[in-house]
Length: 291
Image (cartoon, rainbow, N blue to C red; front, top):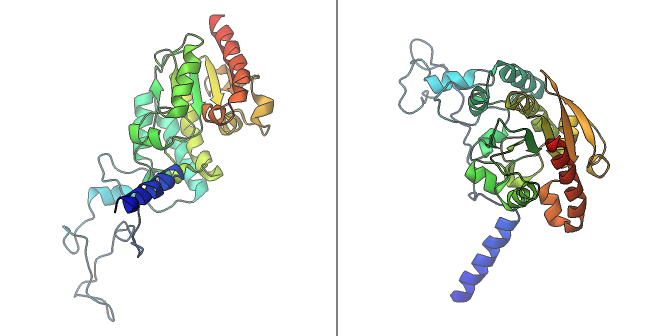
């Protein structure tokens, strides 16, 4: 018995390390089945050749759809306070346009966060535990932006709180910074399932929001952590080995600020020999903040 339990623990540990974070049944379950509103039957009863109409629990036949259903029927924003239900996938172009319009509508970071909480154009929202918006001081002179949250961030609702986050904290501390003197976020604010890489479409949908977040935060220096963040925000196809340590100009939409590319802490955990190069980048950041 003890041997079986030990084998079970080892198997669960293997699945956890591999990124498995949910259990499924033997038979598939369609959890989107009651997400779409159903039309009432015609006057006089059921349609010819159809079985009796089944209505959602708690809703009378012919009644107006509930508020949360009305919100989901809209293109990409659910009604405030609506029950969170996975929305039908939107066309990428329509979702990107909706994201741009929503991001432009935000006048401050609180409004932007509220818009993201209701935005349904990115399907990562349906699989993530919660939105991972930001951490630190939005009035800080420097803003760090990574790619996407991981498992620990998804649970905590804060960016960079796992092993890579602890390394980032130590890197900042080495140049006299902490989270009270920096603002931290990700290009994609929802965790992709199994910590997979966000798709180009998911990144494109989230891009208007992070650009607006950078603009509203008011940082003087943007630090792109890793290749995905660097290529997305700085619009370059060069790899991180070519871009790290270099300064770029970044247009926030209302002003131009300086941007620095460097390695992502998660990469440094896998490749510790590259920490010396990241240290040079952080020394350059320290010098820029001192000027």
